[in-house]
Structure formats: C-alpha cells, structure tokens
Image 1 (cartoon, rainbow, N blue to C red):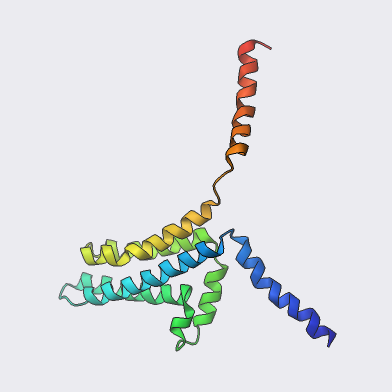
Image 2 (image 1 turned 135 degrees about the vertical axis):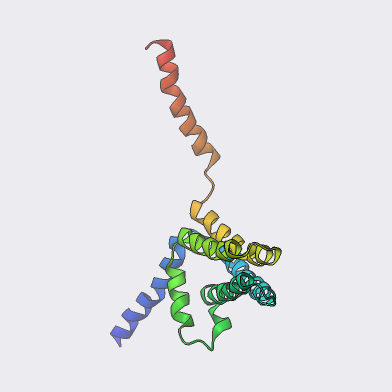
Length: 168
C-alpha cells in the first residue's frame, strides 16, 4: 500500500514539470493549440482543393498539405485522431519538444508546399500553420523584460562611461 502512495505523486508531478519548463501560460498554450487545429483544418481543405488539377506539382503540394494537416492534428489535438494507434505517442513526443523546435518544425512544414507550388491556395492554406509556428517561436523568446530592471542595467552601463569622461 505504501508503494502505491509513493508512486502516485511521482506520476502526477512529471507532467506538471514538463508543462512549466517552457514558461508558457495556460491561455497562450491553448491559443497555440487552437491555431494548430485551425491550421490543420485550413491545410486539409486547401490541400484537397489543390489536388483538383492536372498539374503534378499542385497535386504533390496538395498531398503534402494534407499530410501537414494530419501531423498538426496528431501533435496538437490527438483526440481528433483516435482511430490511429500511435497518436498518443506522437502527441507525447510533440509535448516534450521545446517551443523553438516546434516553431522550426511547423514553419518548415508549412513552407515546403509553398516552395513546391507557389499558388494562392498553398499560400492561404499554409498561412495558419505557419502562424502556429510563429506563435511557438514567440513563446521561445520568453517573457518581455521588466522596464525597471532594464533601466537599472542601462544606468550601470552609463556609469563607467561618465567616469571615463570625468577623467577619474
């Protein structure tokens, strides 16, 4: 009975530490996930529309956009992919990624179909997926600095310069 009690807090504390390590607030994390889901929807719709053509590059870009949609759904909303057995494993690995890694991955994933076939459909279809990467990239930069601490730092930098000018 004591082993169950000691294991339960250890299992509960592990997800809390990974969620707090990246420094994202709950509302920003929710906004990033919502942007990922909306980006997946837009990629899927635009990818399907892009496949209705005879140009092979447009078809390839459309298929890749639909794959992007699947990856976004797997990483950001695994409950949408309950029929896929490995969805939870992919979501766990995506949650362990740092925000800058997600930003690089999502932005690169959204830019590839645009480079493959530069059309309005691929631009607008991948815009929200790219915006998801930008949101994760902004969270990787961290919080905005404190104005008072910045002013103190600037004052400390100016102080030796003033002493040099005075000749002391």
